[in-house]
Image 1: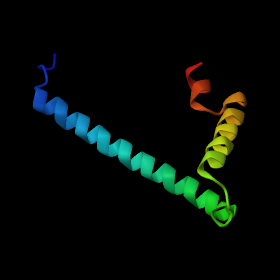
Image 2: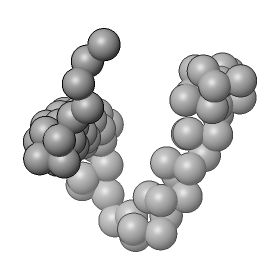
Image 3: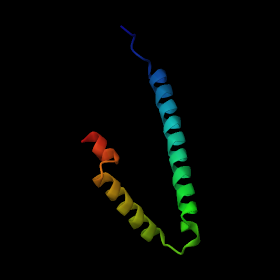
Length: 74
C-alpha cells in the first residue's frame, strides 16, 4: 500500500496537471485559429457576439452527431 501523499506532493501534481491543461488548451486554440484563418474569417467584419453564436451552432451540430464531449459521457 502506498504511503499517503504529502500536501506538497499533491500541490506539485496539481501544478503539473495545470501546466498540461494549459498546453492542451494552447494547442486547441492554435488549431481553431488556423482553421478560422484558412476559412477567411479573419478578413471578415464579424462581431465577437456573432462569432460566439456561430461557434455555439457548430458545437451543437457536433454534439447532435455524437462527436462532442457530452456524447462520450452519455
